[in-house]
Image 1 (spheres, rainbow, N blue to C red):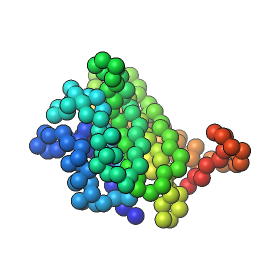
Image 2: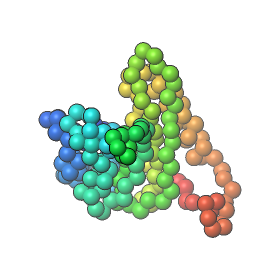
Image 3: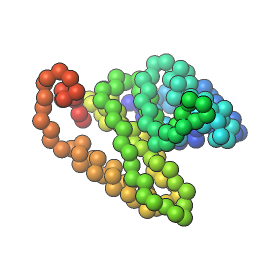
Image 4: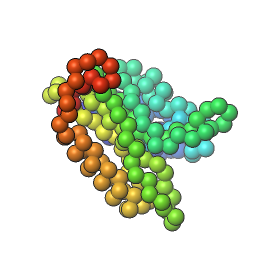
Length: 180
């Protein structure tokens, strides 16, 4: 099984050109992964260097038709007109995806450093070895205090994932789902 984690910096290459199709082609060329965890995915952010505001998850999913995509937005703000500007993380999986969750990470006040809301996107995939939990996140870059708080939240999530839950067989949202 091949898993790739890649900070794609809103699909911008070292030449400054933003091109989701080129990112998809490079992903296939270097790894041909079963699962790809991508950080710094954008949609509607034309003010990012090199971007035209393209919907990068849609473009990547279109360029990688054998993959299911799951997105978690850390930033989701009004854009121009009726659109939205979004920035976050993505999981692409050619393995079947079961349950998906999105977890907001702590965003403490930071009067001296720039920061933004962060998210961890989680997908349970049906891997050849059994059910597998995949989490894609990008911790705060500028603040060690933020990173520490975000790591503490991920550790708390791990305890939640390991906790015993009542198994429910009824139809609907309370129905138990497979968990690794």
